[in-house]
Image (tube, rainbow, N blue to C red; front, side, top):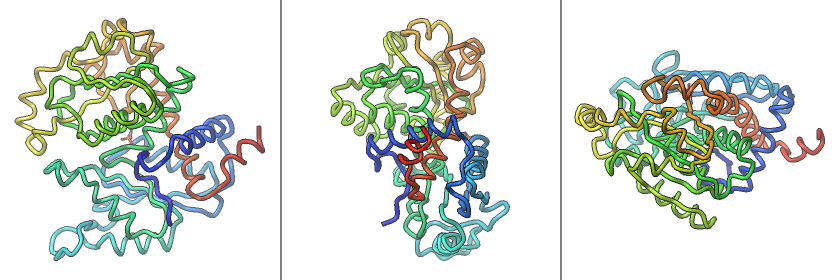
Length: 343
Ligand code: CP
């Protein structure tokens, strides 16, 4: 059976711990040749700065090569739905794309944001599942409705600062943004913080901004398994009080999915959810992070972004290290051996 990295829900905490250990080693020893002769195709259906750069560079630092493809731009548009009469824009089907790429490369990464039309459809994450179903090489999620690579970078950052994440208070706060954004990083924030046994608080403006029940339930169950707390609140002061790590993200209200004008009428009342110094002062000397990109003075103030406690750049750097560790794992490199041999 092919091992994919589609969501951290498929991976045990122990497996992820090992990936993070290897990432820590690679941070100190970036240049390796374990993937010499190996290659990865990176399919970007949406824009990227960090993900593209860190995967391309990471593969090169391991001795392999990455090929970036942007279907619909520099590569043919792809149909992902089965049994379609393909008389629209897409020139080829994922069945052929996955088959051809699997014969050329050793791994395939894909970024495929939801279409923002119908959440009941988008929540099935069909695009990456179609690729994984038809590929005969490992597939890596570079952000769909979750962002597991970002999760690993976030946890690497948390561990660096909090040492033992278990029972430390992780606050995931909604922030304002002029557009209704993907819920992926927020879903992922819940998944990874709860998997590592943190006390998790989700702060959002009202019930319309609750994340999909699947992720709320998963976080709740994982917290329970660790004897940790999971709470949802709309009270800003209560949420920030005593937090050890503050993670901010903006996302669209799911009941208004596909209707950005109606959603905007809701969200414009909540610009005060911006992360600022006053709110951070309520915390337990918390670190602050965000996956980036971030609109300054909309999502977080200059004061917060320029503070010593802001570790967003560290998290972005960690994308490089964790993705290299994940690629080594998927290529069945003896990752624990890699660290023990060189320590
Ligand atoms: N955080 C993140 O995935 O950044 P990019 O969208 O620039 O890749």
